[in-house]
Picture 1 (tube, helix red, strand yellow):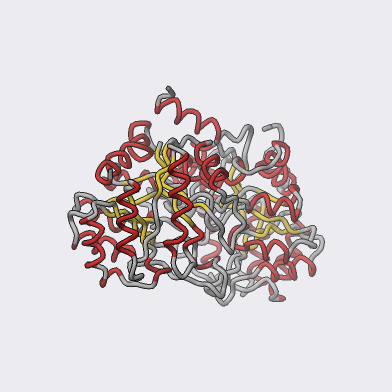
Picture 2 (picture 1 turned 90 degrees about the horizontal axis):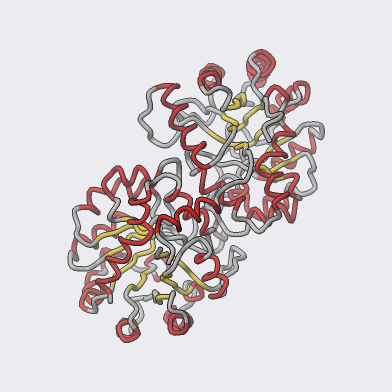
Length: 283
Length: 250
């Protein structure tokens, strides 16, 4: 007879990712979740602690500002990015910050990218819902990402109940990818994009999809691998909105080979991030 | 471990491995030893009761399975179905108010019938996130507060709030704790430290482990419990609370 403790240990073993894991999609607790945290230090301790409990090794972090405005001003982007940088510095490099900008003010966005990516060593660019990805004001941002050799993570969703005015559909991300074939774009929220969204980006080899967003539906990661190839899928949690472990289980529990799982959990995103992310030799 | 939220059958907007054996294998593979199984095939049927035969049959042949029939109290024959549940020893019945099309505010007479039958009433507030439903088949969530209000009006009835988010359960925690036989399942409790925060709110004895398989992956459902909670609390949620509750329906 297996004891309750043995069963729990068995389940924890089944959730073991079997190697290092990079999470492509994390926000500070300061942005979401109603946590009472004690500034950057408290944010780092609780968020990193929750991530490490499930085996996350590094986490790409983007602050959307403490007030989470849908179309942030340049000043709000700067404050958000300063917060992400502070979390990086307080976390011994656990958090890998992306630079959050708004295409509504493209010149300011490029200047902020230069400050944060070229100047402060951020490792990517984050775009949310200020403008849809079809908007030409994204173009200078994407061009800068190419110049600086960092990926762009673009939020996307297909909501039956209706997208927000500036919220991109997967087809918008495909349009962006075709306008910028040299850019490397991570389309966020596999489950939110759903199988139709996967088809929308299928012929865009420079689009990768993160596994975050929505519920842990059976078969979605397998579907993404079948349609895009395992090399175009990266693990993402969307924590703290979603649970690190629940989202990790979407990959660990998927009917995929260990090689494909390793690619999704580590190799693919490692290959997208610049060397200064410091991921070499961690396998 | 008791998985209180398991389904079998077909779901139109998501390709799922939904045969009884597929589902039972998937939830037992992550440790479940007892399964409360309900038929998805009834959800969109004009008379959902017809689909219950499948789970009754599985329960007869597989001792790990307890049938959890779907009941639609707007159907004239529903009291006969309550009696079937009693006759076959199904301890828990599920209502889907959003799919059956009734308001819990008008369900007091029906709730008394379930109370008199000494069954546990599970009210499912969501089967699928409305944002990802097929656009021609959008079904809104049931107001979770209305479930708790129903439980308050029927204190002798054991009521389970099914499919609510962690924030909803957290907001309703004082009301849940004020009722002797009111519970919530964990199938849609997501977010960093979510189960931990519900436990911190005093709900350790009122949470029931549910996977929502095969719509959701059972390993993920387990993850939210085993990563964040100590073994004793995890055991309450994974087994003890459901065991105690099911005793009322046996």
